[in-house]
Length: 298
Image (cartoon, rainbow, N blue to C red; front, side, top):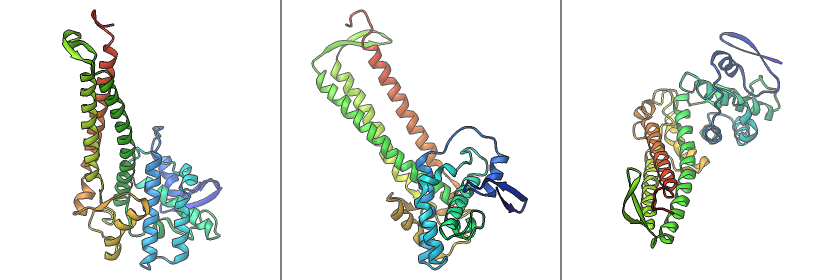
């Protein structure tokens, strides 16, 4: 065990873990829901921290040894992710999650420099979180991870759409009764029904693709309330490009960092699009199931 302290006092921390006193307090203060943070979100958060360390080093705000140690620790995110233990549904708009990741990176970077966990040769706030806030790193990491997951989802929708289109061609000459209120209706070609399925999927695919234009607008550099307080101008101007370079995700600096910090409406929009896709998939599945029902259907 090691002892770490903050303004509230001291806490015992297991020697094996890379998180620190802030994370331990969050574990004690907030109930566990059993939910886990998405792997891509953890990756994105580590990469945001990596980009900030690189830029702070380039601009002379941290020395090369500390920069390189932070970068190396961030590159070990797969091994370190098990130490990101704060529940995703904690209060505080993500502050405990940000501190959990800061402490994990700081302790691993401290080891890289030859120190021991808890000595903080690399400090979680003064170095890892330098010129940042939960309020700009958290939504930026969230948006990056959503973009990555959305692209994976779109690829899945494309494959399904293509498969349905193949069935449209295959079944084009098959005549069958239509369905109105689960009763036999006027005739329709089976291929036409699958064509309608394909068009519904195409609309979902288009909507998911277009929403990325709004997700990619990030507020990194805005710090706590979007004004950039506590961050120098050269950092604010360059950090979005550095995060884009590190993550290979095409993000862009929001035109109004205050607005982007206050308003995260795009997540509600994405939720609605996912719900629409789910409803369409459910409807298509039920329609296919009903194809074999009815008195005149084989």
